[in-house]
Amino acid sequence: MADDDRVLTRAWRHLERPVRILVYLLIALTLVMIYHQSEYLVVHLFNVLLLFVFAAIIALLLTPVIDRMEMLAIFKGRRVLAVLLLYVVILGLIAGVIALVTPALIGQA
Image (tube, rainbow, N blue to C red; front, side, top):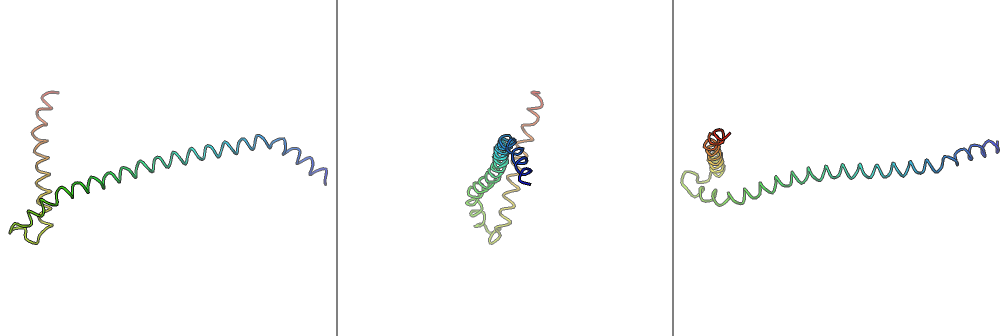
């Protein structure tokens, strides 16, 4: 029985170095994959954070306008209505600019 253990040990010992190299290679590949996945996560989190930053900037810019609109008799105590009207006006301006620029761009194409 002792001879069988020695034969098995000798057989495994001869595979010890290649197995160790494979284990190190798998560890390195795992670290590369973790880095790749974390990079993907960081990019997407940055995009979400960027949306929140732009939303905060827009809110900071529009708050004084909404406060002035709320002082009018029509919007007294109706902040939501003032915000909705301001959004409709801004979207209308954007649509108007697009409508004015599009024919010129098509004509140049």
